[in-house]
Length: 186
Length: 186
Image (cartoon, rainbow over all chains, first blue to last red; front, side):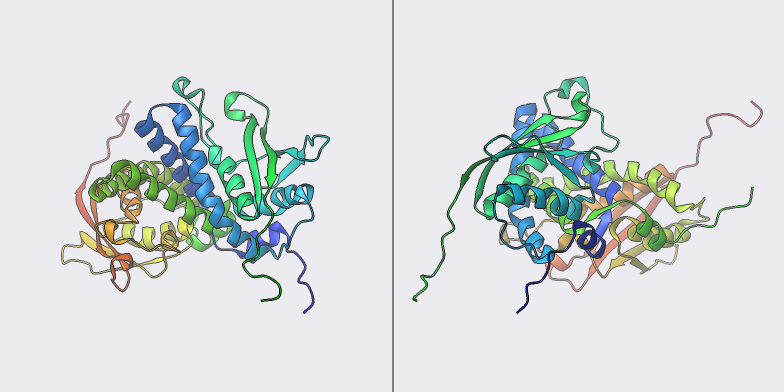
């Protein structure tokens, strides 16, 4: 069977079912507000958003693999490019840029020019420690774990905290060797 | 200035910024799961989803009025048709049917054939009293309140509870006379 070429994030985004971005933004805002009310501590809210993202990521990876025709990436570098160009585009409708690689090729940053999660958002003074978009960390962490990469994801820059852009650092901690359910000779 | 004709829900949906429906569905699922964990009682979860929807609705109405060119509806009947054909389509990408009018023309139902909120959702036995899509009630209630209509919104049929479709009943309780900020002669 000939290999199917990977599809562009743009093409997948255009053909997939979608909902209005403002509805999504307001819905996400409602979650954050709810968590702030329930948990009170912003650190707890950050943790919970990350956990929610993780749960989303471990499921979204299936949709990603099914729709993108992306096959095994050769290394973390290729994986990062695919997330930035296909993953972000396919789900959020915006691309990210991969930058700030370390010498070992195990840490890089995603820079987001446009971020649909934060439209109309302003943080009150009481929420200064909040990582409003922390769900994204969790999504990336969860999705990568499903393809055997343990990562740590951290905000480096955040426009809601006065920075000039959104920069999310992803550090590869460990590549888990894949376990095959059956031996070859079975 | 000539009146601008109202735009179809389809046209607005196609031209608006959008995000992937699966991401939205999973994000909404994460909220519901979070609320179930935090609040434990399904009745409380239903209430909270409704309240979140209300907060979303009071903001979404602005986007709706700005993008749809819909002007004042003559009565509740026209309002209901506009919500079903333009509102649902514009935000969720699906239309609803308006049906089951009462004799007074103050109560009707929206029937949804397709409901992007519930993809991949199955309710465990412990959640049988849950109105999973209760956010929709709140959105409608909140949006209508902003155009001076007090309503009560109730689920009549729910596929997650074994019914054959989604039917949401909207009852007009009171039409609040609009108050103008200035008198005519000021």
